[in-house]
Length: 180
Image 1 (cartoon, rainbow, N blue to C red):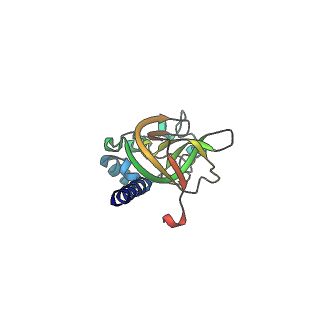
Image 2: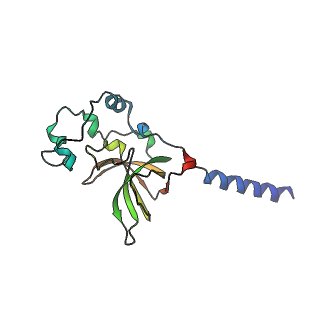
Image 3: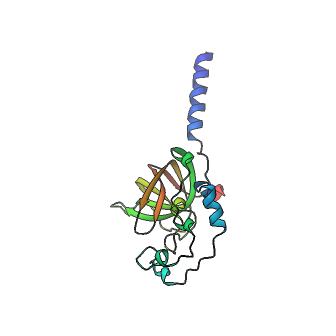
């Protein structure tokens, strides 16, 4: 009698442990300490110049012409210890690809709303490419989401921005009021 009861308890505890939320990562933890310091010391960037029309990375855009922008704005330096780490990261989606039903299957996860729409985009080590074949309906990019999965160091270039990390086959869900 004790053995079947013990086996049931162990199975239940194992399934509860696997269902628990992954450890939450902070966006700044994706940056090496030297980049964090450089970002803190960075001058204020305005969004009123010609780059506001999306020419940040285009020829003649702010990235090529403003030598005052710190190199941290383009940093692809990553934190090697995070490669292969299962985690949960909250942020905002920037849709890149949709399926036939209009669900977003690939997007950038960014630390603040409107990133990559407003220029300049966050540094690549503050952008995560999320590949989500199941797809998710995203009606408002200003609503935060949780992404859970295994983070990997992967440099990805896109017309909107560059990313230094990726998560494949993630779990994606909206941030709920109870999460706050």
